[in-house]
Amino acid sequence: MRKGRCPASPAPAAAAGDAFRRKGEAALCKMVAGGLCLCGLIRLLCSLLVPALFLSGILCVCLFVLLWGIRLWIQQRKKQLTSAGKDGKQPFVIAFFHPYCNAGGGGERVLWCAIRTLQKKYKNIMCIVYTGDRDVTGEDIMEGAFRRFNVKLSHPVKFVFLEKRYLVEARLYPYFTLLGQSLGSVFLAWEALLKCVPDIYIDSMGYAFTLPLFKYLGGCRVGCYVHYPTISTDMLSVVRNQDTRFNNAAFITKNPLFSKFKLVYYYLFAFMYGLVGSCSDVIMVNSSWTLNHILSLWRAGARTSVVYPPCDVQTFLDIPLEEQKSTAEYSVVSVSQFRPEKDHPLQIRAFAKLLKKKRLGQQPSLKLILIGGCRNQQDEERVNSLKRLCEELGVSKDVTFRINIPFEELKKHLAEATIGLHTMWNEHFGIGVVECMAAGTVILAHNSGGPKLDIVVPYEGHITGFLAENEDSYAETMAYILSLSPEKRLEIRENARQSVHRFSDQHFEETFLLSVAPLFK
Image (cartoon, rainbow, N blue to C red; front, side, top):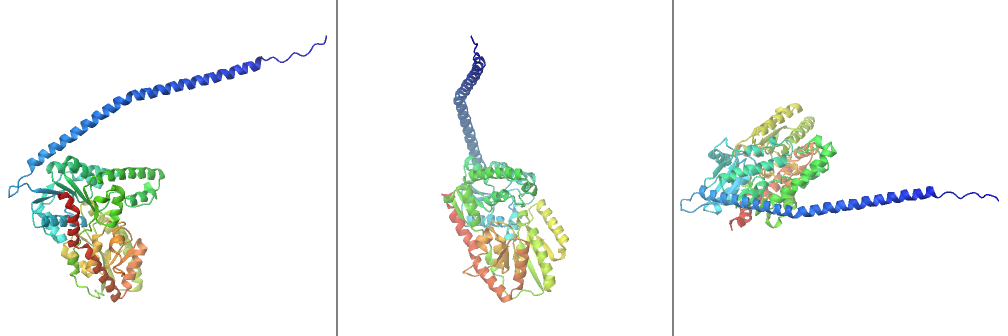
C-alpha cells in the first residue's frame, strides 16, 4: 500500500487566531476600563459642581455685601465732608478728574471752559478739580489758566490735591504701560473719592477705569470727555502689521511671537476698556475720529455725542489779516505740548530738508518756532533731546523753543507766522491747528485724525490748508506754500478763518450743556 503525504498541521494557524483574539479582548477591556474611568471622572466633576456653584454664590454674595457696605460708608463720609453753603443748602458738587490740570495743553483749556460754562448755567454748585499738581497753589493754577488760555472763572474752584499721581506716570511702567497706567488711575481715583465724594463725577483726561469706581462705590452720576481713546483700532492695526511707532518698539515689530503676544494683550485690554467706558452716563468726544473709535469700543451710541473743544478763535480772529507778512524772514510755527506722540522730530527733520532746498533757491531766511508746554521732567528731557537733534542736523540757529509761554506771546508768534505746522499721527482733534488757522497762518497738518476729518477740510468748496504724512511731503508742501503768491496765500488764510467759527467758545458751551444735561436730572 502506497503511503500518502499527511496534511499540514492546523496548530500554527490556530495559535495565531488565539493570539489575535486575545489581543482584541485585551483592547476591548482597555476601552471598557477607559470608559469606566471617564464615566467616573464625569461623575466626580458632577458631584463637585453643586458645591462649587454654592461656594461661588456665597463668594458673590459676600463680595456684593462688602461693596455695598463700602458704598454706604462712602455716602456717610460724604455727609460728614460736605458743608452747607451761605444759604444753608448743601451745594451740588461737580468734580473733574484732571491730575495734570496745570499743564498748558488743549485738554486743560477744555477743563477750564467746561467749569466756566457750568458756573454760568447753574448757581448752587461747587466745582472741584482732583489734581496731582502739589508743587503749586490753587491761586497759581487759576492764574496760569488765565495767562495761557485767557479763561477767567466767575467763582472759585476747590482743588483736591492728590499724593499718588506718580501711579499714572508712564515711566513707572516700561512694559504693559496701558494696563499699568489704567490700574494706577484706579488707585489714584480711590484716593480722590476718599477725600471728596461728589454728586457728579466727570473724567476730563481720559482715565476711563475710574468711572465704575465713582459710579458704583461713590454713588455718583458719571460722565466723561474723551480727548483720545486709550486704545484704538488703529493701534491694533499697527501691532498687527508690525509697524514701528513710538508706542510699538522695534524689538517687538521684529519678533513675530512678541507681536502676536502684544496683539492678544491689546485685544484683552480693548475688551476691558469697552466695559469700563460703557459705565458712563454721558460720553462726550472731541472729534469725528474719536467718535468712530469710541462707538466701536464702548458701544454706547445713545449716550455719546461730539462736543468740539473750545478754541479761543475770536481772540485770534482779531489779529489783522495782512496780505503780505514780513518778506525778510518767514517763520514756521508749531503749537503743541512736548509729548512723544506729537512727533516734533518729524517737524525738525522736514524743516532741515526745507532749508537745504531754500539755500539752493536763495529765498528769504526761514525760522522754525516750537511752542508748547512741559508737564514734567520727562517732557523737559524730550526738549533737550530735540535740541540735540537740531545740532546733529545743523539747524540749531534756525530753530527756537518757546516753553510754557504766556497767551499774549503765543498770539504774537502766530500773528507773524507764515505757516502753522502740525505732525501728530491720528491727532484726536487739534486745538493748535484751529488756533493757527484762526490767527491767519497757512496750516500744514498731518493727513489723519481730527485735522483730516474735521478741521482742514474744504469750506464752501474752497481750500483751507494742506495735509502731509512724511518728511519729504512736509518739506515739499512747505516749499510749495512759500512759493505761492501773497494773494493766493491770503485767499487760503481767509477761507481757513471763515471755517473755524464752528470751534468757538460759544459753540462749545451750547453743545457741552446739552450733553451734560442728563447728569442734572
